[in-house]
Structure formats: C-alpha cells, structure tokens
Image (tube, rainbow, N blue to C red; front, side):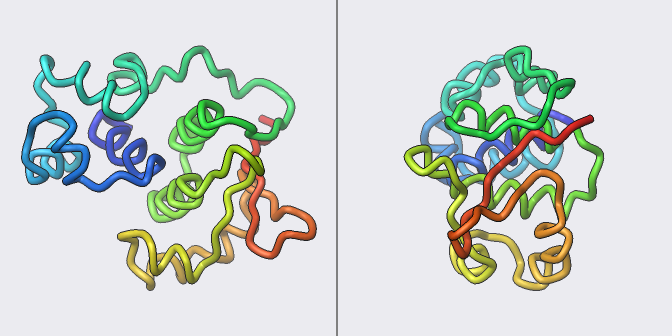
Length: 165
C-alpha cells in the first residue's frame, strides 16, 4: 500500500472528489489523479495534502494511524477519527482492491451521530464513482465481511468494526 493508495482511499472516505482535493492544495485534479495512480507526490506537497485530507503526514507516508493497533478485541467505530483508523486497518488487511474500494465507499457514509454507515448498494452505485459491476461483483463479500455488521433494525445501516486478529 503506497502513498497514492492512501490518498485515494482517504479522499474517498471523506467523500471528496479529485477536483475538490486539487482545489484545496492548489493543484489541478489531473495532478491529484497522477499522485493516486503513481504515488509520486512531491515531498513539499505531502503536508498540504495531509491537512486537506484531515490526516497526518505519517499516515500518508507510512500508513501510521496514530498508534492504532489491530491487536485488540472487536470494537465499534463511533467517531470520524475512528472511521479513519478503521479504513487504515482495512487497507492493511490484505484483501482484494475491489472489496477495499467498496468498503471505503461504505465508510464514507459514516454518520457520527448514529455511529453507523448509512447506505445501500443502490446508493453506492448512484453516489460514488465506483462501477456498478464492481459493486455487484463484491457485494456478497461486503455483506459477509468481518469488517462490517449489518445494524439491527436498520435496513442499510452498517456498523464498522475492528475484527479480532
């Protein structure tokens, strides 16, 4: 997992477009796209990108999520900061990129007030830049993922969890 991947996933978690990130850091969206594809981000831009993505330089450069440890019992994500930690753990989990992309998109719907990611397959297709076929191809894996739990009594509410190691 490189810096470009972390920029892309963090940006998606925040529901931000490449154009919006580019505007925040004073660069064209094509530049942001290039950073995400190649990981070639100028050193002097990393602090500005981290600030725009509400994260740390350490996270962008090395995946450090403020000392988050996956060696603990499952816990519910209750804050946007924990949602960022959750996404970092998902990225390090070794699962396929298609599943990571869909989980990241679900995480971007995190509602801190309800402590749930409120979305549906249809909303993901409609409101993200993910391909419908990609979402369809991994949806069963999403629902079976140890990283999510369907919230009781809420049709499309997902609890984001840190699973046992």
